[in-house]
Amino acid sequence: MENPLLRIHPSDNVAVALEDVEAGRQIAIGGLSITLSSPIPRGHKVALTKLSVGENVVKYGAPIGHATAPILAGDWVHTQNLKTNLGGTLEYVYKPKANSIAPHGTELSFEGFLRPNGSVGIRNELWIIPTVGCVNHIAESLARRFSQRLPQGSIDGVYAFTHPYGCSQLGEDHASTQKLLASLAQHPNAGGVLILGLGCENNTMASFRKLLGDADPCRFRFLISQQVEDEVEAGLQMLEELAHSAGAMRRQPVPVSALRVGLKCGGSDGLSGITANPLVGAFSDLLIASGGTTILTEVPEMFGAETLLMNRCVSREVYEKCVTMVNGFKEYFLRHNQVVYENPSPGNKEGGISTLEEKSLGCTQKGGCGPVVDVLDYASRLQHPGLNLLNGPGNDIVAATALAAAGAHLILFTTGRGTPLGCCVPTIKISSNSALAQHKKNWIDFDAGAMLHGMTQKELAARLMLEVVEFASGRKQTKSEINGFREIAIFKDGVTL
Image (cartoon, rainbow, N blue to C red):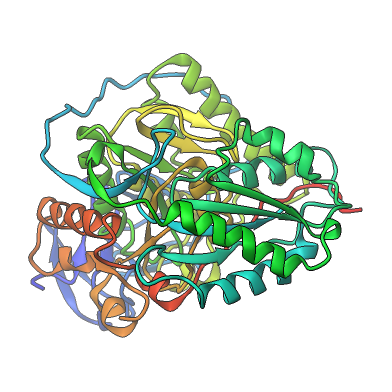
């Protein structure tokens, strides 16, 4: 590449190293000439001007913290001389920003499964969902044994999604567990669902069934293990019945407007906010322009950039829900005597991210430019097409599970460090740099690092859209699917009995 440094915004007083750069190198950038006083690792920041103690460090055109020591042009800027400006809860003022994504007709479609209730799935799987952790191993045994019986091609797979909850929980935790499991059970990627209980848990089968409403008898079976002599044989029989019904389903063309895509990042580095996250944002805009839906979560990774989302809310009602979500999550931290800005992770820091503001300004780019049409509570399901915000933590598997429960058919998961994680829905890993894509070919599905090697964001976003259509149509499996990496995790905040 011509210049190893990138100044993202004209007002930035730091630049980002696009590759490892040696000490002593003289580099011209933005009308300035600087000499590096130390080696700058890929993804890390270098000062473009002299910065005094207390002066804001600016990246993405916004402050990402302040200098804690004198910094000279050419110095490495990181945790040793940079600290967050963040604190506790804030009062916000709604300053609506007039922005919209012009809808456009598209001929793009994918091959999906049209369910009797009108929903669309991109997989035709059998799911086993325990009401309580006590029956986890029974669920896993059923999935393993029935997988050996499946006719070739009729069902995409049989999967048990185990968890440690469903009993000994109180209040909001118990309600959240029930609500999340019920939302997952209604996911259209599952052609058939076996709800597996024990019989003495708090999450009783009777109370759980109420959350499902009028459950389609062709799609659901319910098994209480204590009430049958052999729960494995009973479960296998029920799975046989579900497979018979679901196996009759066939893929058919569905407009891309029916797609619901979760947006997630994990193991980020200093290039995530330059390549992978903006790329996913451009994809989000393309999908929304076609009538589709995207979902952005990880509330703690909005801190410091939250006003950029708040001012894109389509109404004051949605704005107020956004404020409640953000301040509510800050209060959650404070309630547990934890600092609000205890982020980024050690891996993030090694990759060049120094403060939470810096991480958030990069993370929120996954939401593109679209207006925020709704803000969802944890474990709630989508109601409106367009860009939605979802209440949830930054933890990778908890956030990914919440996205799936909201109704995401698949998840676009950006990473600069790499992660093998897979959720209950297809999880497409997008690397921020080409070195990672080459090094972990068994984890990475798409390389956003190509943006640093000649491809434009627009070209790469169009390519990503076509790839998503291939994954949604079942013509390709994600690396996490191929590896058999599928799991769920439930958010917990209260007392365990």
